[in-house]
Figure (cartoon, rainbow, N blue to C red):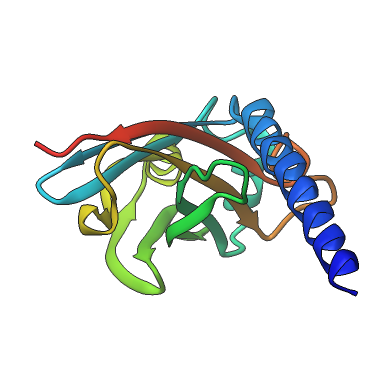
Amino acid sequence: MVEARLYSRCVLLALAFIAGPAGLVQAQSQGEALRVRPIYKDGQVLVSFSLNGGLTDEMKAVVQSGLRTVFTYTVELKMRQAAWVDRTIGTAVVSTSVDYDNLTRRHTISQSRNGRVEQSFVVENPAEVAQMVTNFDKLPLFDTKQLQANREYYVVVRADARPRSNSSLWPWSGTASGFARFTFIPN
């Protein structure tokens, strides 16, 4: 009985060891879709990310249709774990909704973080709208008090948009993702 439990634990550990790097390889192969740049400063992990290539023509058409379009970015801070599944330190959700008014030809953009609206804008220029929904600079998403000195961490960003048209809104099978690694060395 004890041998069976020990055997099953060893098998589970081996599977977790194999599955962990496989998940990281998948994130690396999709890493071209989003550029991610984490830095830490003044007790915060600041995350910058941008969608490579900006909005596609299909995305622009969905926005211009007048349907509320929501771009959602799920950001996870993870710590590398040797021979085990990497630990998630924190998760933040950054979203931007766009409402286009065909009569006034203006876009109302609302940006929120973790479900709370932080700012709203009225914008006329579609190029400015594309910039606001695909580029985020130095967002303070995580506290460095949660981090251990001299440990390797990484930030994973997954992007999605709603509604979708008949084909995928993103050119990368429904979602885009990217990640970046860093080592936390406190000053």
